[in-house]
Image (cartoon, rainbow, N blue to C red; front, side, top):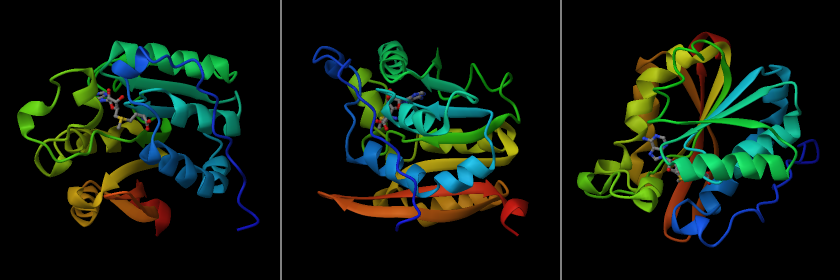
Length: 221
Ligand SMILES: C[S@@+](CC[C@H](N)C(=O)[O-])C[C@H]1O[C@@H](n2cnc3c(N)ncnc32)[C@H](O)[C@@H]1O
């Protein structure tokens, strides 16, 4: 499509091999989310976002890519349960001229009061791999992929918080795997008052991934 504005993949030469023993190396799912944001950039820009929040920012490449395209008028916030990921997220932002404020917390616990109703763009590329429940949180790397039953145990805990975090015009972008049952995710989010769109879907090796976008129902009526 000619009219799609490009989002540059950020530099991430700041990430050392030692970091990669603890944090998620940008991979196909990260780039799928960046591609989905590129596809939706016109809609994001129209909203003149003031706050973008990425949950589980890992290396920070996704939020940095979005921030580089949107510019400095917006506040860029990130959370991760892993303090090393928070540090690398800030560094990746800095390397690309973007300021990202990070908070080390479980999902959005430490920021949800402050950011209530203010988040215009919410991003989550969750740990989505189907694993035994007790693999969740076993270590830094397990945090990056272990999703427990149906790969849903971590992302499912964020869904009830989305309504109170998003601004009235806010959009929520979520990466999901076929095994996570995207139709059921959409049904769950419908119950919380959201409309959904599948923005992109891609087979990457054995994984069938998609990016879902949610917005308050009345926005799309
Ligand atoms: C699949 S990685 C995605 C990293 C990055 N957003 C990307 O797309 O490359 C999932 C990230 O979520 C973080 N994470 C896992 N469980 C979390 C939780 N309960 N709260 C906050 N972050 C979490 C992990 O530490 C990891 O950085």
